[in-house]
Length: 238
Ligand code: SAH
Image (cartoon, rainbow, N blue to C red; front, side, top):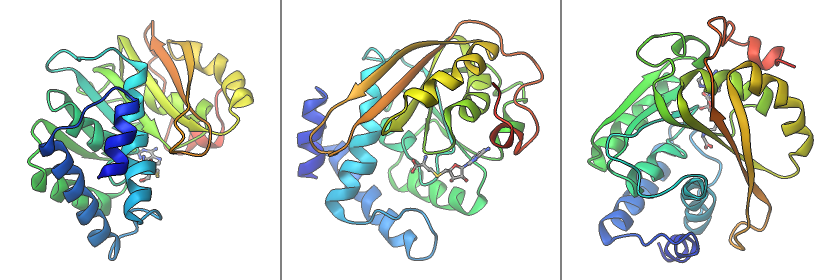
């Protein structure tokens, strides 16, 4: 896990031996289950450390550490647990919900949280469009995270409804995102958000430009959002 250790230091994070052991087990299980389930295209040991683990940890640059105990975090469209599980390994005190529409992936998630002995993790199988209307999840989270799920205009409709007022949504993005961010402005304010920052992540490890789009939840999300499954992506709010 040397690549991860070095990268994490650049984020001012020092990983403990236990955390490194957890990342190692996560890697091994990911590769093992990936033979039966389509979990990730990235399988090389060093590449996983950078593109999955380190990339997940970069979100700490968009909030203040330490987090208070019992902070509630949801990862929308978590897939194999990215970025939620690396964050939970780093910050064991958070309460984490991993949400994904695919039932098969939940099988892996259940296995891995048990293997890593992670507490206070709930796995929810469902579409964000539906789960976000349930009272136990709607506007309940201090931090909402999401990587590689949808374009920003569609994504904010899937994520901001989960965010408590005073909470924050962090979208992880790559490449040139200026137009994407511009065209999402209307949707962001309609859903009760406020674009706070677009933070550049410049670690040599990545070899490309990465961004954290930071959106604060300043008001209620109107009850009609998110719209029905599939609609946010098909007809993004403008
Ligand atoms: N965040 C992970 C996975 C990205 S792939 C990573 O960065 O590696 C996108 C994932 O989002 C898939 O697992 C898919 O099932 C899930 N997803 C897409 N749309 C969704 C929705 N509307 N509700 C819940 N999950 C969704």
